[in-house]
Length: 307
Image (cartoon, rainbow, N blue to C red):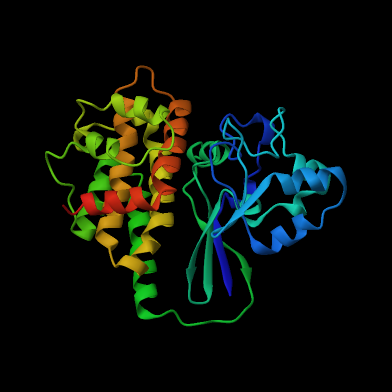
């Protein structure tokens, strides 16, 4: 089995109490079965507090968020009392993993870092070197990939290479991706309205979409100063989302979704005076949280790209 990751993977560190958008606020936090068994056995006053902080239903165990949608283990300093009292080894699986994601292939697992985390957004979008992908683990066994998986990985490698061809303007590279998969973005689609129709996590995202009310997302020029971070965003999207085509067979639509996502961020930049890398990082974080972490929103956008 091989474990493959982007070359920046090992550079990630949680910024804990310095995070302005804590993953311990506003997100449902499920507790896996094995961790819940451990939580039931924690003794003393903290054990009682921990057990009172959990509720169970037919779907499993979950932390009981407070009126501000904060995890009950998150203290007012922005630190996790569970880690302080019991150590990181007692985190439930979802907390230990976040913001990591995985894609699974035959004999190969890919692991990455989700942009919904502001530390990840800063790490990825501030890079200058083209991203490469490294083997973190390799047991030495070679398992042939099924034809479908091999074809998808070959296609993704080719599309990422197009995105990283820095002798061309980013607009031209994005168009080459669309041409390569024979999936042009439809004209005269009010994409801002499509995005506005989706399920909402944070009302602040409405403020961003308001900027696009009269913008043609597919025709907005990309600010040269932000071409590099938008390239990094595009590569991240392609790395993460093209493997989903193993389930739905939609390589063209998923590639077009990656391009559309870049163009939406570029349009936000074009509608913002003195747009900076900080602006872009925050929009990328919001975009990831609103779109990537909602199966319903992903499905709706992929459908919209065909209809």
